[in-house]
Image (cartoon, rainbow, N blue to C red; front, side, top):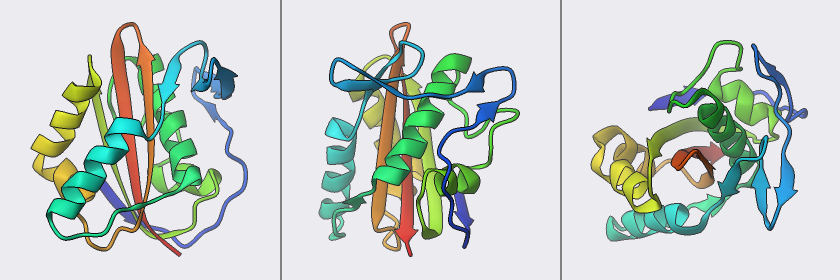
Length: 164
């Protein structure tokens, strides 16, 4: 779990990561992909966040495509590394990643997880006190989700923000 504050605006959503070269997104059969991996966006992961927030009397989060782009790119790197981590050597920090993707925010947090099924990653996000706290943070108003499948494993990222 990360929570940071940043006041900068960004533009370029692509960039090299040490040893991996640039991360490029392309369309694959209706889903976005990185290096042949498959992505799923929003869908069930976003719906579970909405249900958990509504159960606590909180409003649903607004979808933010810039946060989703940052989440997809980071999920792609997690898949390439085979690990659910908040950052990798040579990769910009969370605030820089979402700023580069075009998000403008006051507060920011991130959930990451790896699992074999969507239900598994959803359950982990809901079971973990830190992940759940991010999902239920009343100050957050925006969400972007990226899920990449590689080798039978799903790598999921939820980025939350209080937008500017």
